[in-house]
Length: 109
Image (cartoon, rainbow, N blue to C red; front, top):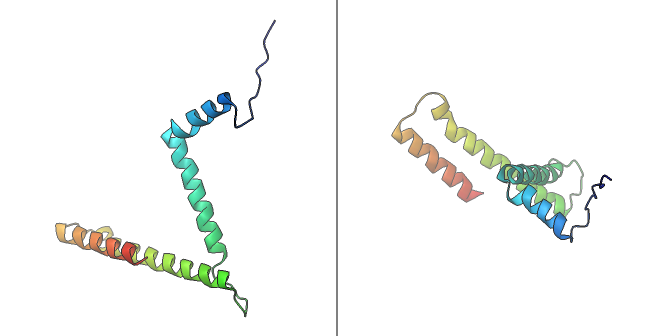
């Protein structure tokens, strides 16, 4: 007689905890993917509040616009810091300058 496999779905069960631990903690690539998706979702939620055309913006919209502006400014600064390196100016001074620019932009955000 063949034994049927039981699907364990109760998150409190030891078998399910073992499966979750194996899948998300013991496999760093899977955990990295899960965290990446979570980060993308968070950025998407924040970006959804950017650029509202409502005449009377709420404090939430103002906050989201501020976050979006800060992220856009940071992104532009990071791209700008990488421009000399992308153009082929790879020297100790250019790398140090780029690192300083990235640190400054990150400190500002």
